[in-house]
Image 1: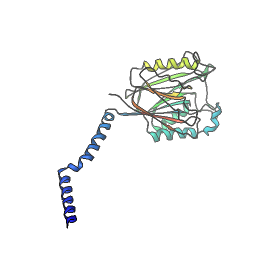
Image 2: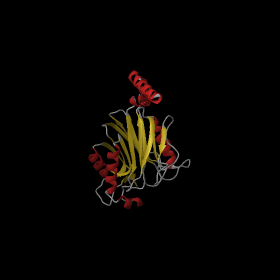
Image 3: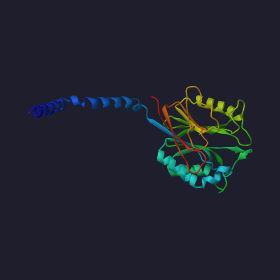
Length: 269
C-alpha cells in the first residue's frame, strides 16, 4: 500500500511539473545555448571556395594521370557537390574552364600564362585553348584584374588574378614559381607581391592557390589555411582571407596530383 501511494504521488508530481512547464527547463536551456551559437552565424552569410590544381596543360608529367577528360568531369562534380560560391583553378586551359563554367552555370575569368614569350596552347588533345589560371564565381563578376609578378623562374611567367563579385566579395587566385621559398627566390618575391595585392583590395577578400611553398604569403589581418593534411603534395596549396570563422576541408582527388581544398567562412557585418 505504501509503495502504491508513493508511486501515485510521483505520477501526480510529474504531471504538476509538466503542466507548470518546469520540466521543460533543461530543453529550453539547450535551445537557448543553440540560439547563442547560431546568433553570430545568422549575421554572417556563409561563403565557400573550392581550390584545385588540374594539371591540364598536356606537357606536365602528371597529365597522364588526369585521364582527360575525366579530370574535367571530376572538377565539375566537386563544384556541384560542394555548391561553393567561388572556385580557383591552377594549371587549367581556357577551353576547359569555359566548359566547366557552362556545365556548372558559374561566371569566370581566365588569366593566360605567358610561356617562353607567348601564350602556351594546351595539347593532347589540341584545341583546348591556352594554359593559365581561372576564377569562377556563382555570383556575377563586376570587375576583374590580373597582372604578372615582377620576377619569374625559368620560361613560365606567373600571374595573379582577382575578381570582384556582385556580392561585394573579391576572389583571387594564383600559382607561384617552383624554385623554393628561400629569401631572394622568385617564389619569395612573388609571395611578397601577392601579399601586397591582397592587402590592397579594400573589400572582403578570399584567395586560394598552389603557392609552391609552406610559408604563408598572407598580409597582416588575413588568416591562413593550407592543405598540410593532404595525401598528395601536402602543404603547398594555401587559402588566405579576411572573412569570418574560416574552416578548411580536404577532399582526395582521383585524376590530378593535388587534393581539393574547400574553405567555408562567414561574411562579416
